[in-house]
Length: 565
Image (cartoon, rainbow, N blue to C red):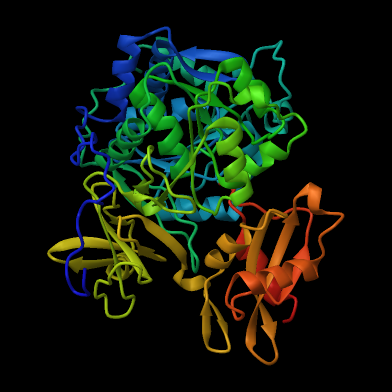
C-alpha cells in the first residue's frame, strides 16, 4: 500500500466465518428488550447483590417509568433526560424508560459535582433527571430551576435484606427520604404509579433507527465536555456487533462492572446483554475483593474490564483460581495490559485478554481483536462495515503499513455530530474518497495483517530535545518488566532538555524488596531508545483512576507541572 491509495476495507485477518455486513434486528434497543421479555420472561435480566430481576418484570418497570416520565414529568419526544445513577437495576430501567418515552438519554457520571451537573443540564437542555439518592444534595440547587423534575432512586430497594455481600456506601449510607418539595419524586412511587394509574401508560414509541437516542459527553482534553449525538441505529449496531463477535447467547452471565454511563460499559455489557437475552451481573461500585464470590456464585462467563481492574483482582487476597471456572471471554481496552499478567491469564486459565478500541464518538468499538487470533497490546482489526485508515495528521494523506499517523474511522457507529458544536464538527470530520471520516486524535499504525496499534494521543506527546516521545508507547515497553504492576509515563520539566520522561511505578509485591528505581531506569535504557527511556522513576503505592478505571494520566501530568509553577 502506498501513500495516497485507499486502504483495504477488510483486514487480511478477517475471520473466515464472519460476515462483513452485520445483520441487524428490527427496530431499536427497546424492541430487543421486548423480544427478550416475550421469549424468556422469567430469565434473570439483572443480578444485584443476590437479587435477580426477570426480563418480563424489567420490561414492565421500564414501561411504568416511561409512562410516569410522559404523564407526570411532561417528557415529550426528543426531550433530553439526565440519568445520574450508579450501576444498578435502576440504571437499566431508567435507560430503557427514557428511550421508551421517545426521549434522549443524557448519561451523567455520578461523581460529578453541582457545577458540572449544571453545565450538562444547560448544554443539553435537559429538564428532567433520574438520580440516585446519594446525589440529592448535589442536584438540590438545580431542582426547581434548571431541573423541573427529579426522580430519586434508592439502591437498597433492589438488594435482599439477607444479602451475603458487602455493600458499598452508596447503597448503605444514601438518604432514604426524598425531599418533600415540588419537583421531587420517589422512584418506587413513580414505578407504582406508572404501572397502575389511569392515563399513565406510555404512548406508542415513534422513534426510528435514525432518530437521536443518546448524548454521551466526552471528557474533553481541553475546554468543556461535548455531547456526542448518537442515533438508535448506532447504539444498536455496536451492541449487536459485540454480542456476535464474542459469541454470546442467552446462557451467558455478563459483568456490569464498568460504569454504565460510559460507552464501554453501556454497550459492551448492558446493551450487549439485552440484545442477547443474557444475564447482567451488576456491582454499584467497583470492589475487587467482591468479584471472586460473585463470579463463583453466579458463574460469570464474560468479563468486560479495564486492564487495571484485572490487575486489581489478581492481586486481591480474596482471589482464587476457581472463580474463573466458567469465564470464557475476557475483553477490554483503554490501556496496555502488563505482559506478566497476560501470560498468567493464558497459562493458568487459558484466557486471552481480547483488546478493542473505541471512543465516545463511536459508541464504543471500531476495532476488536479476532477471538481466534488476538495480538497483545493491540487495538485489533476494523470491525464490520468500518473503514479505518492511518493518515498524516497535517496533510491527511493516507500512510502505508507500519507508519505512524492519526487513526481516522468511518462506519455506522460514528456520531452524527457534536450537539450544538458546529465548530467542533468542522474540526472533527474530513472527507476521504467521498466518505465522511472521524479524526480520532489517536496516533497509531496498521500492520500488514490489518491489525492496528496505538502509539498515543496527539496531545500527549513529550518533546525531549526535539525528539517526540509517546507515553503510551513507553508504557507498553515498561509493562514487559515483570517487576512492574502498573505505570504511568508523564512529562517532567528539565532545564536542559525542556522536558524529560518520568515514570510513576507501582511495583509487584514480589519485587518490592529487591528492585530499586535505578534498576528500572537501567533496564529501560536497555529496552528502548535512550531519549524515550525514563530518566526518573518514582515508586508509588497506587495510581489515580478515572471513572472508567483507566489510569488518570492527565491528573498526574498536571500535578507534575503544577508543582513547578
